[in-house]
Length: 203
Image (cartoon, rainbow, N blue to C red; front, side, top):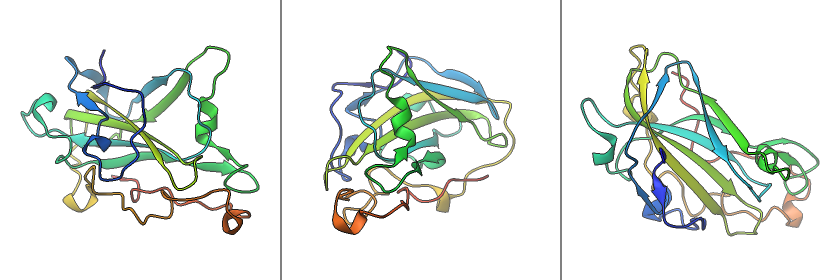
């Protein structure tokens, strides 16, 4: 298995949980996925059940000459390269979220493609996919998964420190986009939703 392995399919509930970075325990995989800068890489999900909440994709450079298996995933700097949330609809509870498209009841997988930034410096990186499900009021469910990439054919772009975040650390317990009741009266007519974690790094 290429991705970092986990011990349970249960979600992570706390924004301060050390497993928020790469799941529980997020053990390092034995290999890297080769991918060119500017190319797409696709994560495959089977039998996804939840329909509501944002999805994000992050990268972290493991360091020059550093094997990603030796990196502390809670200390490395992550930067967001993709996000999707509420697409359309009358409100947060009844609207169509990107996450809904992962519900494939015909046995086919949910495919999650993302493009590696074209100008990014080549090297060894970790990629982190996160699904945040908010269908239970005030009880967010985080589903993070990580894998190791060998990015080739890149440019000279290095992500500045101010664009990097940590897991845990980037999410706060008072974030209204995370700890939310989408069924409440105050949210009955809302069609706006701010995806947590800050902006996408545009390069």
